[in-house]
Image (cartoon, rainbow, N blue to C red; front, side, top):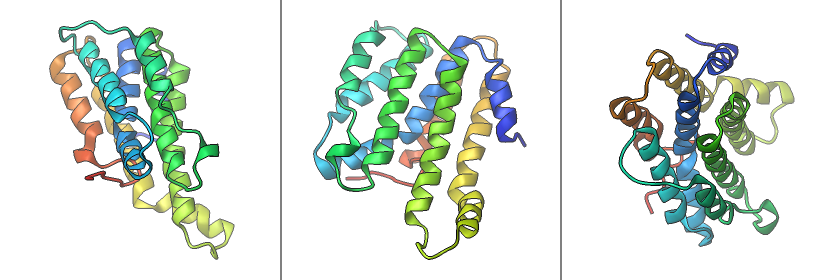
Length: 200
């Protein structure tokens, strides 16, 4: 079983297409957080974000179609919520999801190990922040650390990233079959990294 440091070490060896695929999977898994927030607040054009992510998957899978990721990034960036404009917790995981998608679009233009590492950490921190928000406010700092470290969502996030890295590690070239499997893993039946499934 890979540890966090092993995941980071593996990412450092990845080719550009693997870094982009890893990043797309992180964004895909976080996407329901944005959908849920957008439905509650009537903020954001979710169709633009969904289309941008779809185009990422299509390009990675070498499916027909043309994409301008610089243009897509500008469109998505306009849909990123500001925490200053919303007075409830849901803006934070939505912001993380939008940032993950922006990072993925950057990866499609110029892949970076640092960006992949950042997005992996972003998703993990999103889970930790959610658990801190939902924890009993009366528990001690030590109990909070233990609560987060041993929580099912924390374990699921690590397992997801472990599985993702393992799937991408061996193939030398991308294939539609592989990328479809990565996307299905990340979609997680519509359940996000913090357990949100927007069915509205």
